[in-house]
Image (cartoon, rainbow, N blue to C red; front, side, top):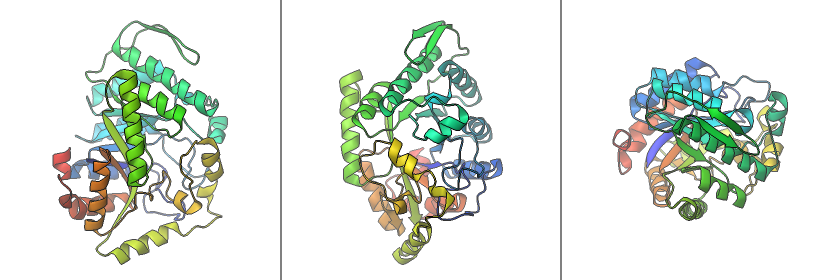
Length: 347
């Protein structure tokens, strides 16, 4: 399993803690990315949201694709997996961006195609936000056009949501970006198995993750004749010298303040996402169901649980922690040596 991380574009990950010591600035992202690159982490996920769903919609957050170019230009090995919502982009224009980024950092780019869930954000920024299952149809067409223009010139396509007319995108990347996508509904899983070569999931129990991974692998084999290339899972990680210290930190960050502005998006997230498990306000305090894998405890306890997810089919663990840069140092020092392979070897 490779170890990766989330970029804290919102000024952190926690809805119950206002100041996490990592403001939403390029300086913060640069520090985190360069720390991860130096320590040998494999991938950084750069989420794409135009409103801040962690600290409140009136708080600053950073734009994903500008950050992607900057991260690639200031690191040496770190792969950047950037989220992209088809309702906010033209696929051929996105392909042109990827063509240029591939020239900056060949082979270090991946996509996380997100069907989107936030209607208010789409209203404010003019995004196209169809019904849930239609958003996966939109995503399928988006990827078909994007990859089509990166593979051949000229490229034409006539779909319900997107069209291309003798479109030329040059230069072609030496390596096509891997395509991750996440979804839990039947329609979502079926679409993802067709258009994405890798699966991205929120945190879950080992049993929940094993079922999802096996199901999407099977769908992928049926639709395209091959299994998924990668499976990424998001998780919030707390590693401390003692279990008591780890649990105290967990309690600190999950004590729910219903008036916290970070909960403004809670109802929209649950209403517009076809989730296969319920999400409590306490669990939502860190987002992406990152607490559900229970990667909280001593290095030995967390290493044992990570090995269980490796056995369940997860190939990339996308870590959230706070404050992130020093926690990455702790994870590399105390946790990584207990895993089957070191971070550097895994990269």
